[in-house]
Structure formats: structure tokens, C-alpha cells
Length: 224
Image (tube, rainbow, N blue to C red; front, side, top):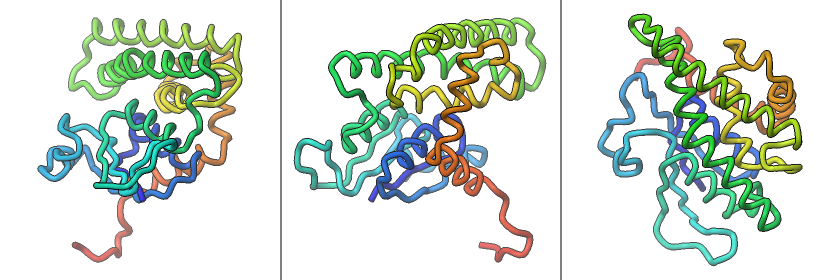
């Protein structure tokens, strides 16, 4: 059993996408970042950077070596994806070259697409005042990165080649988030990729669970 500490943000959705694809047994523990749950002392023991997602695997194992022992906690979405891919023996590439390509595009997202897109969305949607320089800087960089992805997807079905992988799961939630802002309208290959991943049953299940986590309780729900 895997405990997933989660809130339905792009980084959170990366892990539910992977867990739904692999069928690994997991339980969601909501970490409401709007209420500051990420700063709770118990959560900091799992994720010292006070960021979600994080997981605790109560049956740790890497797919090749026997597992067991004490529960294993992992923070940082890229590290979690690589661990789950090793555990499930799926979605990390079949050959040496494909495995390298998967890691390249996974790290590209972790180091570039995610941070730049996150900053863009902050300045466009959440900043208390309009900062034209910040909006332009991060929108331009997000568009540049989407262009990089579009050129890649012009030559391959998925980010790392012919096979769906953690590289796609890592980038998809961020690209899906900015699609609503019209930023992929000029990137036909990215749009095709977003549509294909969005239609996968695991993707639909992951986002449905995310909506349930953040949905307000019914008006007649008992108070805690």
C-alpha cells in the first residue's frame, strides 16, 4: 500500500497519473496547500521542503530486488515517478537509449517547464498586482518551452519516443493547465498529444479523483 500526500495541482496530478496507469494500490491523504497543511510537523517528516506530492510506500521495493523493511518515504515528484517506474517495471523506457531519453525529458520538465510555467501562472492569475515584466518574461519562456515540446512531438508520438512514459506524465499536467489560457493554440503537435493523453482511462480516473479531493463538502455534511 502506498500513501499519497496530494493536492490536485500539476505536480500532484503527475503521481496520480502514474499510480492509475500502474494499478498500484494507494490511498490519498489530502494536503490542502491553501490551508497550510504542507507545514504540519508530521508532513515535514515526509517532505522536508514542505511541498507535495510525497509518498510513503509500506511495501518498498524496486521491482528487481526484494522489498520489505520499514516504510519508505519519498518527496519530489520526479524522484517519485522514477521510483514508481522502477517498482512497476513500466513507463521508464525499454532500451538503454529510451531510458536515457525518458530521463532527459523528465528532467527537462522538472528543471524548466514546471518552474517557468508555475511562475507564469502566478504572475498572470494569482499575483496581487499586475507586473508586466514578470508576465512577459515567464509567458515568453513558457511559449519557448512549448515550442521545444512541439518540435519534439512533431517527430515522435510521445515525449520520449513511441511509448508513453513518466516523461509524458510529468509534463502533461502543466501543459493541460496552460491550455486553458490558449498557449498551445499555435502548437498543433502539443495539442494532439494533450488530447491523446487526456483520453486515456487512467488520466480520466486521476483527474476525477483530484476533483473529488478538492470539492467542497456537501452543505449537510456533519462538521468535524
